[in-house]
Image 1 (cartoon, rainbow, N blue to C red):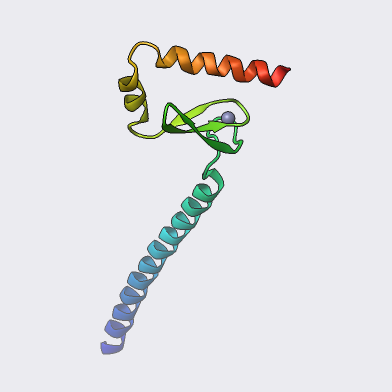
Image 2 (image 1 turned 90 degrees about the horizontal axis):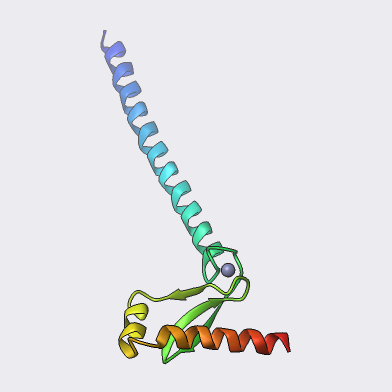
Length: 106
Ligand SMILES: [Zn+2]
């Protein structure tokens, strides 16, 4: 009878460790996947996947996509830009965009 109880105890223990290991393995898989995703996406446009190039507009650092021309702003950059010139910073941005495009066409 004692042996049967010992076997049961061992089985329960084994099951516990098996579950712990599975949990750990799943966590490691998830971490590895996140690291891979981060390394692939770092400094790349989320829209088209091209490399983002740092630039400055009115002393505010921005990241601009070489592929689609999308612009990424830091958490407070839009607010900073808006505060700098609340009437025309937007116009200035698009005027600069048009000039850049015109230069590229020439
Ligand atoms: Zn892009």
